[in-house]
Amino acid sequence: MVTIQEMIERIKPLDQKAMEEAQRRLDSLTKPPGSLGRLEEMAKQAAGITGEVTPDLSRKAVMVMAGDHGVCEEGVSAFPPEVTPQMVLNFLGGGAAVNVLARQASADVVCVDIGVNAELEHPGLEQRKIRRGTGNIARGPAMTRAEAEAAVRVGFELVAERAAQGYRVFATGEMGIGNTTPSSAIMVALTGISPDQAVGRGTGIDEARRLHKVDVVRRALEINAPDPADALDVLAKLGGLEIAGLVGVILGAAAHRCLVVVDGFISSAAALIAVRLAPQAAAYMVGSHMSMEQGHALLVEAAGLKPVLHMDMRLGEGTGAVLAFHFIDAAQLIMKEMATFESAGVSGKE
Image (cartoon, rainbow, N blue to C red):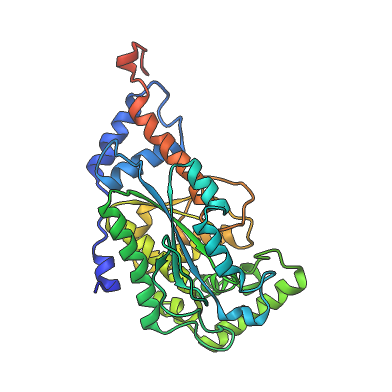
């Protein structure tokens, strides 16, 4: 059974030689140096992660972790908790937004029951339930430290299984009614910003309920007193099972030299936990989009992410991350198909 420390120790630095070779390739292409901006950065990053200048990144998966939250008892969401298992079945039926976008991107959707407060059966479901939902963080801890570590292990092992099958790009996705509240609490605990700055409208609540949600986050911090120097303590006391699973996805991707594309607010909270546990994991992450959720700009900055897209999205599920797959593909096509100055007979820079 792999421990979190062992996960961390398996994450190695990027391959600098491959990145230098990728840079030479980019500089030889028929364009001014650096003129393709983030696409060039992505190409270099992919080379450093995989150790190959033009890796095969065709096999992609979005890992949709699903879990419920006891804090829904506090009335923090516009939707009832019953929506979580209903949406899991929607994912498995191929009808959710992430399914549509994943089909367009030729990516697979892996739906994981890591903490849904219902018994679900479906041949396509990854049954990895740690417990049926978290505790109410406004009244006590979300879970035990052992449960948090077990949930991280689930994400790590799922990535390990698929990396062995040839997957080299993963996206973080999630489903869990109420999960912007624990994500905000994690952000407050680890960055020191105020609950009012961190808490947004989530599923579309009004200002009165947002202020109530601010108070819920404040109470969660006071009651649980998480240690900001111990990211696993913060995760266990304030987080969600799906958030913990995504921490494992990020650590697993980094340990297996795969790209991991981080989605929106909830996924970014998981990314922040991951980089506090393993700072070297940041080099394996690609920021996908800037969410409309209040506080996301501060959260991505804290996690060291640099989002590619600004689409005014706030759905979650991995939707923004899957859209970013197209840019990863574009970067690889540039590396593989664009002519060099020499091959095209074009005069280079003097």
